[in-house]
Length: 345
Image 1 (tube, rainbow, N blue to C red):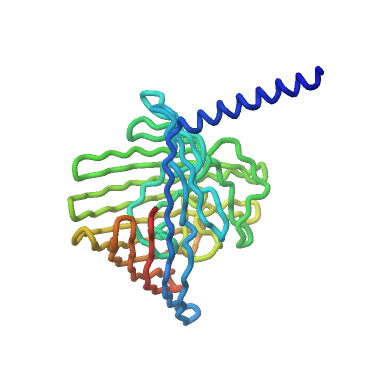
Image 2: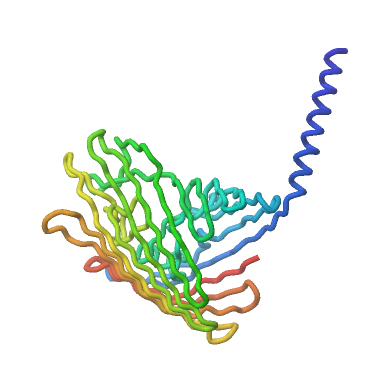
């Protein structure tokens, strides 16, 4: 009898828990959304003297939800399709405590200050070709108005024997990032900075830093934006695609027991004009350079430029034709044209 009574009590507790959590779930406001994106591009590479057509589901196609529990507590999740598999793009909660807010989870870091809408290479937006793109990472972030500061999951990667590795390293502090953004009528302004450090082989410190400045002028039909950055070993903080392959791309190099730092800079300029509610134009240019701190070191640099004409076919339905170039100086030159097709739902 005691066994039956205990089972009955456990069942009642389980039922109460289901009711409790079910009530909490229904109390929250779940706003689901999705975006299907397909790229269709012809590319012409000087390196292999070929023209290739590709059509694929973009890895940044997504489905997710914004969750509003109450005025203080919100959250968001978003899954993408990287490699043909579901992957977590965003997953975080945010607590508004009055003068500011606390974010915990995976989100864009404070250094995310986009300017370009370039669609080639999965909506690359000149990332690593002139624009400082930090990506989405696990973080603990505080926001106070336009100011953000975050402790971000660190990257302890370096180059050895032309291979990127993260072995024999010790990390003692998280990667730190901050930014401040301000809007004034037709003008927007932003600055940001990031720093990370780790130790190689218990003897050598590898320090990374980057400083970014961004500005944008906007009217009802025209906009002009620009961004510039400078840093050291920036591969540990932002994307760097100066070579077109994984052979340094902004990371420090280990030569024997010596650390060789990698200096970097980048700039971009983007102009856009809305012809009407259906058609607009955007043109952009980006340039990035990395160079090791050694005598007679060769610089690695890349330039990219494009022209696109976004077309809105209906609410949430877009086709964006684009033509452009990615020029890996003295290595390869890739000309491309095609379009991105997108439906938001």
